Image (cartoon, rainbow, N blue to C red):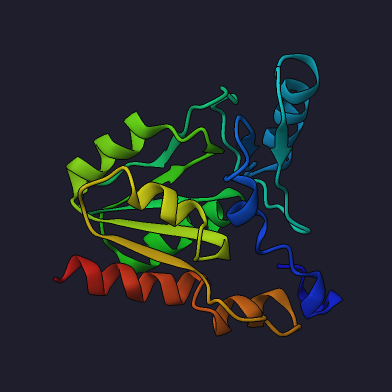
Length: 193
């Protein structure tokens, strides 16, 4: 989401089309430090096509875990529900988990392609339910990829298959149900089922 730049400028479709390109790697940093590490990796180590997706505003999540290609990071441990958060949504997921008061596991996915299937599946088996939180349309995004590898319910939080208007990021996130308070309500609802 780019906020007030205008509805035609939102970069909310790229995960959906990039992940279909054979042999491409798609990285999603959750902090400026992680972006720097991913750029270093892309330029100096990676062999093949690679895309690094970064938002207009990227929060510092203060992760001390260095980037490792193809590896997700458990940003918050929990046992009632898993949130797999993509890029700039990691901090929002952590705030939503705190607001909800539930035992939420938050995974900073870091690489949408290739997925760290082992970390995601292990968490899914532990909690029994996954929320995928992404700054992308729900169709064909990270949620669709994750849904194909787990055997638990997956709730995909992202944008509908329709243009998103322009406005401040806070308002747009709230209108689309991807702000911390809206997500916390989903967490509470799903944990009480």
